[in-house]
Length: 431
Image 1 (cartoon, one colour):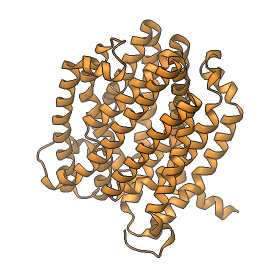
Image 2 (cartoon, helix red, strand yellow):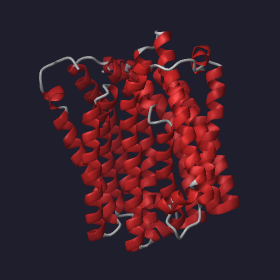
Image 3 (tube, one colour):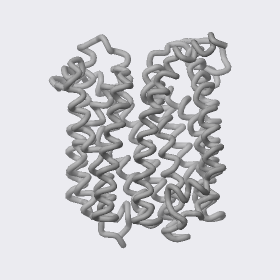
Image 4 (cartoon, helix red, strand yellow):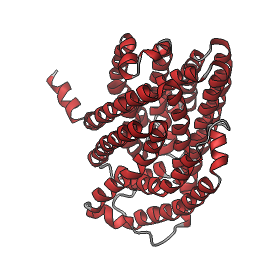
């Protein structure tokens, strides 16, 4: 028994998970308080509108960096001790992001009316939101690349510490702006928080001599333009198509059942996003660099099963607790106005469990730059999600959106098992 606990204590995944848990706990607490403030002051309608902004902002941030984050992490992890390769990949990334960010910022600022109608609808006048995003976008892109450097070098303690500080600062900004300006304040808080994070990140990086030397951009590598373009396309598909589908589903619920029902659905997704922070940061911090270094199928299989063995039981237990306390959680995080969202919990939690199991496998697409496999599986999954969501929402109302979420990730998990069947069930081979 002692030897088992010794092995567990020395397991890198356990170490990263434990430290990550601290950062996630802080982020969850700040996120829960922010959610409560928004629910009290803005209600279900405000939450639905904020959901649309969050979805489109995710897309804009990814487009601004051309989705290069995962590619930068991969190549830094592979070339940690090769300074020339590091400078090539980072300089190329800087120049690409600068051009794309400036072009996108100009479009957002000078055509803000188009973006308002696309995201919120013609009945709303939130042009100022997209003008503000245009100004903040360069800060988003610079921060994303700086974090990719930290992540690629596996400096997970620094990465998590930055998230903790940013979360606490973001909470104060959100509470202050929502208190003073209500819905407009919430919009500005969502826009400002990621931009302010750059100031904290820069201070930390400048104090790390090895990192500071990598911030200079002095050349472009055509080789890395080609390699990074694959990551750009992969990331951009996920970052643009999925949010667009979520906005369409939310707007469909608004049109068919009213904005309050869309707010309930946004509420369950907000709860999900709080605890899913743990798994997404863990996958980015630990799994992606680890899979990038793996060369044999047996090692890939072992890493996936090890992740399942250590992480999944924790989430299963947590999901059971959340389900049985769902009524308390609704009243604690939101208000009595949100009790109608209770039926969504079972579908969302079950869907999140399959989502976690799927993501652990799907990160191999990114680690090994499996471009076409990634593109095809994502398109199939997104198409399935949209079709089944429209059908189930039409048949069961807003609850159908969460039902579709569950069925989609069961389908996606089975699809991934089919794609990687040789790695899981076949003889050991080079990958």
